[in-house]
Image 1 (cartoon, rainbow, N blue to C red):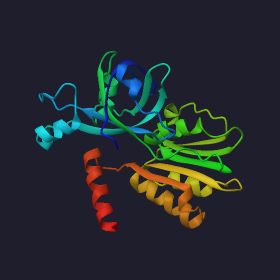
Image 2 (image 1 turned 90 degrees about the horizontal axis):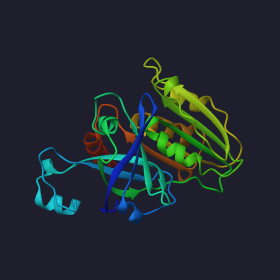
Image 3 (image 1 turned 180 degrees about the vertical axis):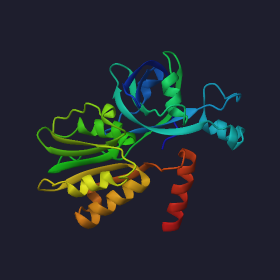
Length: 265
C-alpha cells in the first residue's frame, strides 16, 4: 500500500444498526485522495499512542525512523464505504461491539472535528461487468465492501448476496442496479458453519460467476474450498480473503498471515 497519509476531520456520525456506526469525514487533504475503481478500496487508520508526540505534518516513515516500534501508531484496516469527491466526503462503516477493540469504541465516541488520520488507499476487486452473475458472501466486516460492490453491478444482472450478522436488527438496506437475491444469516453459536450451509444450499444462476468472499479467516477458507471443489469456480473468478481471525486483534492477525505466507512459500 502507498505510504501517503491523509489527515481528515470527522464531519458527522450515524448509527446504522446496533452494531454498525458510520463515520463521514472530510478536509482539504481529501482533494488529493486517489480515486480508484475498486469497490473493496481500503485504508489503514492510524491511532496515535497516548503520550507520544509525532511530527507535524504527520509522516509515517519519519515516525518509524525516529520512534521505537511500541510508539508507532496502531493500525486498523477498514473499507471505504463511499468516496464523494464532489462533496469532499469519505465514508467508513465501523463494526461496534461495546468497549472491546480499538476502532469501534473510537467511532462510537467520535464527534465533529475529531481528527482521522489514514494511509492508502489499496484495493483489488470490483464487479466484472462481463460476468453473467455475481456472488457476494461475508459477515458484517465485509458489509461495506459488499454494499459498494452491489452499487456497481450492471443493471439487471443477477447478484446472490449472503451475509451473516448478529440478528435481524443488524440487517441493512442494500441497493443495486442488478437483480438482487439477498439472504441474511443470523449468528448462532450452535451453527458456526451456517454461512457455508447457506452457500451450499443455494441454487446458482447459469453462466460465469464473479465472486467476492470476505470475512472471518476460518469461515472464508471453508467457503473458498466449497466454491473451488464443489462448484468448480475458476480461481481467477474469485476474490477471497480473510478480513479478521477469531481470537486475534489486527496485530495478531498480521502475524498469523505472515506465518501462513512463509509456510506456503
